[in-house]
Image 1 (cartoon, rainbow over the protein chains, first blue to last red):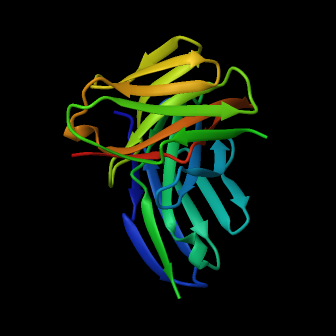
Image 2 (image 1 turned 90 degrees about the vertical axis):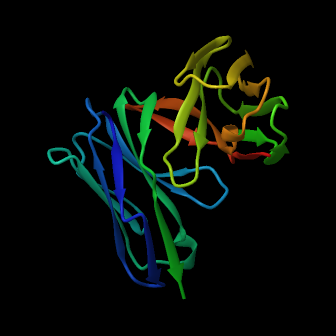
Length: 112
Length: 114
C-alpha cells in the first residue's frame, strides 16, 4: 500500500533554533518527493521538489534531503522564525505527478 | 501570472442541504484540476481530478460529485450533505514542469455540516 509517514506529529522550538522533520514512504514506483508548507486555514505552498536523482535541495532556510534507497526524506529548517509556524507536509508522487500521496504533516510551532 | 480562486472561504450547512463549491484558475489554459479534502490530523485525500472540460475522474466513492463546465472552472457539488462531509476542501491546478507535474493549491473552503 502506498503510504507516507511523517514524524514527529508536532514540534515546538524556540525562535532561532534549527529543526529537522522526517518523512518515510512506501510509494512505488517513485517519481518525485515534495515538501509543502501549509499555514493554518490556507492552501499548501510548495517548498521543494526532488526527483529520484536528487539527494538535496535548498530553498532559503529550508533544506530537503532524499535517500531513495531507504525511502526517507528530511526537511531541515535553519534559524527558525515565528513565521515558520505551520504544518509541513511530505508528498510523494508515484505516477507522473498526477496522483500524489500525502503525509499527515508535522505541525511546527516556533515560539519566542 | 497564474492565480487560483475558491469560494466561499467558509460555509456552514445543515445536514441534507445541497452544496456547491467553486474553483477558478486564471493565467493558464487547459490545466489539470483537482479537488482534495483535508480532515483534521489526516493527509489530503484526492476526491476528483480533471484533465479537460467535461472529463472527471473520481478517486473514492462518496456523496460528492464534480463538474468542469469551462476550461478553468471546477465545481464540487452534493445533493444532500452528510455530517461526514465536513472538512477543509482544496482545489488545485497543475502544470508539467520538466520531468514532474507541479501542483498549486487554492486558499481552501472550510465546510461545517451541522
